[in-house]
Image 1 (cartoon, rainbow, N blue to C red):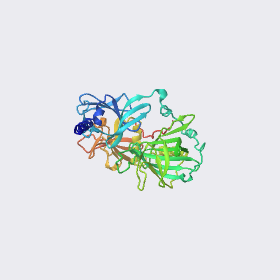
Image 2 (cartoon, helix red, strand yellow):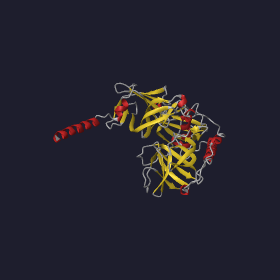
Image 3 (cartoon, helix red, strand yellow):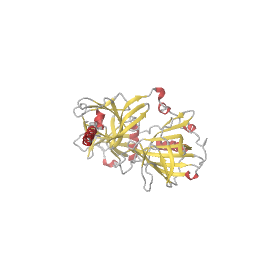
Image 4 (cartoon, rainbow, N blue to C red):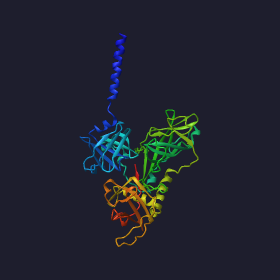
Length: 474
């Protein structure tokens, strides 16, 4: 009887192993779907790609402007047909055989988010060394169910009026029962794969402010932080005792977004300023996970499910973000609005003083013109740079005379659909080279591909004007 029992048990164990072995891999599950998938970063407002898996191991791939965009430019293979795709043996990778460069995505982990009323489900993926969201729409909110922060996302307001909507955080605040909590603390964490640094100030009167600067998304395993700055957020509110714990309850959230394509980190260009508030009159517009503060072994820790912990030396609790004492004083939320506005107008009055300034300005303007400079598509997701000199590119006019040297120059990769256009052949491949002279933009062209002669031509309908800084509520 005992022998039979062990035989049956062995068979069951073997059957369980077979079941595990037969479990479909992630990439096989992904391509078996008949949904339209979207590849995007942030909220899918720029550089979105739609992918629909077809029969015969092919896919329809389009570059579109937003999630669920209906109009786009197809990506084909070298025979101008829908590209084939292949599954990696690791169970995580899908490779699309598109013309010139393959599109490769690698699944990282599951993803679910409500993006402006569209419920997205899929994966965080890695592609081209960057982290993206790859998801399809599972449900759309009815207009009445979309939160105010979504329906009023583009509600513009004059820069002089936004200050009037900032709530007074001292109203209803209560003195700290534990005065040792008061002080300034440095914060270092990761939010949605973005390395984030900042400062938290807790005041004795029971108010707080936390300022965070997020850099572009990258792999968690990267040893070096990205230098590209995506946004700065400033949140203020009340410190509350709830359930025997200390919570940070927000009242105001100010977000300053920056242009990031071809960004000059020494002189950032803000693109928008947005204010959200939590109040009885407006409802809760600030959508974030609860933030809790706790002491542990004489150390202060911040708990939030929005944050991925970056463990620091000497940190005894690795499940929360360590807060370290700091002497850094923060800029107040209202002062940040004033300073950003003043900074922008000074920038607008004198936008160009270096190659990096020119690259950032052209990148910002192209962001507002469907990633095009004039009628030429640019791709700041590949090669770009400013480590060149105007004297490196002496243009020759049609008459054979030397053209004036440019004041500032930079180079950038053309978009896939512009590679056969005016790109110049370099040791790094085909690149677009732009220059500015007397506040006008010029593009370097190569009249004969087998000659080193180049000429500068002015880019029409592309004034070098700093884009308007947008102020919005909700």
